Length: 409
Ligand SMILES: *Cc1c(COP(=O)(O)O)cnc(C)c1O
Image 1: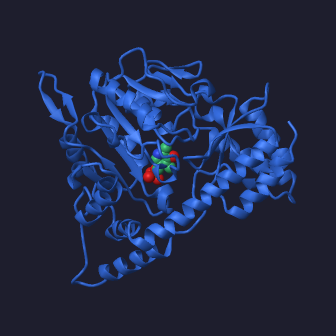
Image 2 (image 1 turned 45 degrees about the vertical axis):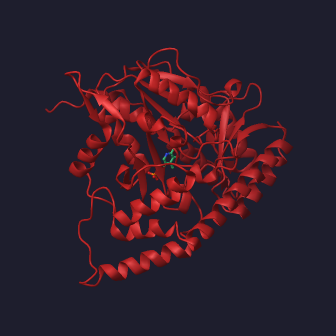
């Protein structure tokens, strides 16, 4: 028989969401009258905005006419979208990039998962704990870790993000080749200021490391000193790749569109002591393995930047931000300590003394019929924390918040 990639066997089962689903199903079966509300979902509840739907409809009609039909497009995305992203997200913030440094894709998850294949097998990886699982698992699959023991994979530099450091990663004392940063953060909601991000860029410049910067929640930033793009920090264009997505910005979780910025100045070393640009490698990778995002979807993403598209998507984000505020004030009323929710749709609450993440999950389900996500599911440092999301409807969020506010701990 053919042998398996042994690194896949190191992966820990992703029991988090299936365990949650099982517990909720069992509870509902035992309590058929219960109105269970989920504040656990990482998916949006609001539909695509009219400007986006109009663009989808228009582009669909074009696809049905011989004169305007499009077949394979450029793997990196159509120029109209890359130019629009450049103007709308970068030039407008004083960041100078060029449109061919932007690669349009079908998701930040796949890009961030695929990117690691450009690095050598022995590259040393640093990532936040708790963490979005994709960064870690894809490096496990690629064989960059040892086995899993006592909650940790060997060979990984874990950067604990806990209350003592305001859930912000601290520079490692050892050398890291690749650093994954997610800001604003899923699951903690913490966000790096430009000053904090500068320390990471300086570290990367000094250590010749590369930062993979996941900024999927950029649209939720409210505080003026939080960085919208890592390229706002001088020097980042030599060391950083940035991942963005239309998923949480414009409700594209099912429509699928994202983009990755790979500046031409980011270099890797070759075995013979030379240099090669990361940009040329990612271009090679994408043109070999990817055939681009549907034309109609790219037109839909372009419409997010139109005046109507911006106005309409901003309203929805403001609504989710209001949900976050509602949840935060309910938690305060219940006497709980909570973080996040200011620059991200995630609230990271501290479970009461002596109550672990899963016990808190059970209590919330049984006593308030509210579902959230145990922090320990995102990493060892998430134990004693619990994630609530602001993505439900205002009505259900308010209802859930009232129930939580009435709990005693
Ligand atoms: C939701 C999310 C994404 C977006 O992924 P898509 O594949 O673009 O839907 C990326 N990173 C993080 C941390 C996320 O939570």
